[in-house]
Image (cartoon, rainbow, N blue to C red; front, side, top):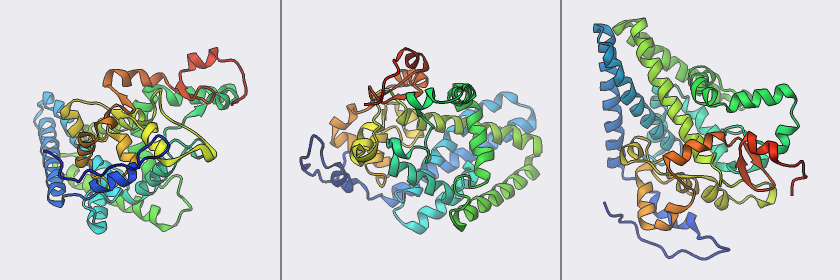
Length: 348
């Protein structure tokens, strides 16, 4: 569908367009479309979940293959929750917040707590001086070299794909998010958010266990959450962990530069693009997080020059896993092997 948004002539600047002003025209959601997107995500998720439960109950074990599409729709629910956290899905605070909170019971993600940590990520993405808020932990070469032997081993284990995308989703979604880690002393809201979500999860689990049994519930829901969580962590990873990403520190850090060049445009086939809520158009999302997910393709249609910035394909993204350290001298992410060949020189 052709965009009806007026196309503004961009103002000129030091090599960059005034993208924030341009993208303001795409921030208004179509609330009927938002409701439709929510419905075509919730209903299939519920159907696939029920079919998986029935497969376990009646012993049709091949039916557990439906865990894969169920996980896909749970991932899409998380993307809708993500939009709600930015106030972009309905652009109505009450509707966005309560939609996000209810979805959070399904995704095992306390909405208000997650929203605050994610806001910190958006405010500091690409800033070397403010790493750690909702980010994949990334060390510079110098920081890694300064670690003890055990410290290096710990970082290597953390960055290993089996840990990052295997153990990581289980730890994050099933265990870590049960308490407001990182915001223990940040007031009442993180605690209320996590405890209310935990209560909602407990009620949901008890009802479903009563309906289909404890074993079938665990056999269905835990794999769905784990697969969806692994996919979500992978997406978050490749959105910022690619070779030509942008990091800077101090006064050198600029929001627009970090958003445009520190976030990738992850190119996926149409079905995967839809299932992931267009989150692969991540550089545009970071430029203006209030643009609804279903309007992000409009921006690329109207401004095709954005499509080639930070562009990585699925095949190229597989090579990003080895990029684990930031080389401050050459301003790029590198592998452990590359780091071993670098001379011990001061950072420029």
